[in-house]
Image (cartoon, rainbow, N blue to C red; front, side, top):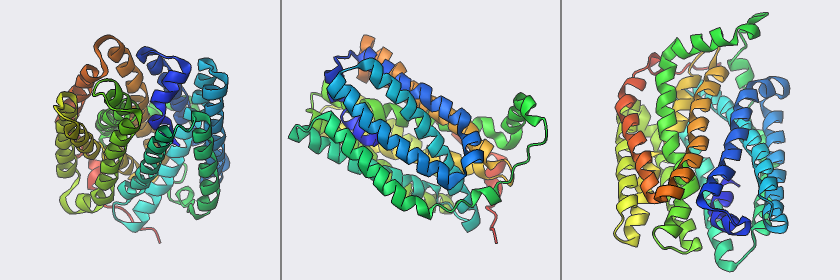
Length: 383
């Protein structure tokens, strides 16, 4: 669903007659909803449990996606689209936190790095969505039908596969909240931030997520507007980016177990920085695709590794995942609207210079962030 939305964003822009800055405002509405979803994710998890929470989330996302197509194509209403994106963002981030908490618990029980592979399946779906979106654009299929198809498919597959969610996080991550502790949330948050160098981990994830998020939302438009590609070819550029992310995540877990977090993340970050620069200055169409591929490799491991490291705690895993997710989602979802504002005044390609600068700063703190105490704690097997 997410890739379908991104791949058809140029068509959405045309249907709603939006400027580049207006697209940034549209994306900001999703960011607002997503931050709210992160805030309420622990409460939803506690009330519904992981399996029920994910099932309800996928159903809601499918309905929201279908309604987004109606608001765009049939109604032509920017306000309606923004309202739906707020709901979509809320449910998307809350569901994603629950998925990561459960995946991190499974990772700890197995004693090896598997979260990057789990995130690779997000990328697999994104590849399918990007290719399908490119095909829909080439065939002239309207946005409403495209979005409805993606929503219905996700609901059907979600209901089928959610049966395999372990739900073991409830037993691995017991609550340690004491009576009245909710009144001192700021003290609890401060304590968690000091624990396991969580602040540096969060900043590292924020920088890498910024690079990923801006590519997700602006790579297609930059390919169309600045490099002169058609909408279908621009969607394929995004597909190349996502394919590279998938490869990085498939092979990232074994590489990390063999070489360590620091070496792998720094190497990937350097590739990503080179990719962004190449995409900006691309002298030919092949260079645009090559830059997207390197960019995708560079951003492939930041989010899953950050989640994995944050969850490596016997009692505070869900809250730590939530804190790192706030860093990541805040950067991933608020960053693109900022790029929209800059792109309106300076052009999207020039706005990508900011992305390169933030990724460079992230590379500088990555060695220290990956030397955090939590990274040296071996995963504990659960009998």
